[in-house]
Image (cartoon, rainbow, N blue to C red; front, side, top):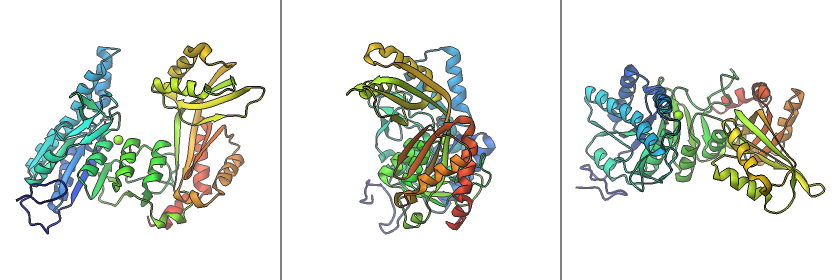
Length: 429
Ligand code: ASP
Ligand code: MG
């Protein structure tokens, strides 16, 4: 009979046997061709054979999603978002069906499910939907029958019963949200890198894999340009306290654990350096210094779905102030159009923009209790002759806006100055 558990799992297992649920997410490069799919199938089978209940979330094969987007572009310059979602959601379904077949050949019971079948309910914002709730009964009953469950990532069904997708990179979010809903022991993110690094190893060859970072550090890193995990997935992990393990698909080694803050982290001042190279800056000069101006500008930009980042406004002089902020480079044109469209509603002297900027961010729990880090960072940049255009901080992050062609040099100099290579080693790599 069913175990009287949290989710009423219909398990024909003794009460005392604790079966762990393991969510394993594989990215597009991990399932890029038939051979890779068979390789991942062996990995999933191995987890099942260890006795865990396995839910695998898959991305679309290789660059499938890019290919589908390009195909839509060939057909129409204004594809309906609803139809984009019907189109894009197919990629991950292909991966899941093929993976089920590969697992069958290995002698396992496996079944694939769309996001909708998996009980993932989203809002109605096509191509960038948010998960509202997950009804895990169907998956739990499949697990209860001993099946390996394969879920198509990056998709769900909206409250008005249309297929939706969660935005690029959304399979990470599917995996973490399912792990939360299923009360899984861990959400493993299998990818083509071996973990989260102290900096991008393509820029800093001395970058080291971090054994452990906190949810909050990862959140700051993802927001500051680290591409290992989709930002939303880290938000969900932090909110529901889901332990993440980012690791390689192609090697057995431990990767990076992402969990709640641990005491060990207090020893390191800086955990990692993140950077962004595709940013632009807009400055509104001589803006009338009166209540409501910032509200008007940023409401208009938000209404156009432009993600404004670092914002600074200087002290007003003679009733006028300068207001600068950054936007993602691809949104620069749109942002300038929005500002121009505001006309008299935004009384200011001049708008200028710079499409040649980048950002470098230091992230670390250790910053909470070590006030000198910003000063050291600025000194290092000064000694490199790098000019800081804007500064933005949180309790565990310092970000500088600098010229794009100085970003890589800044990353290397800071990695060296904060001794991140040996710092990571000391922390147990
Ligand atoms: N296939 C989707 C993308 O390429 C979702 C994902 O892989 O996470 O963005
Ligand atoms: Mg990804």
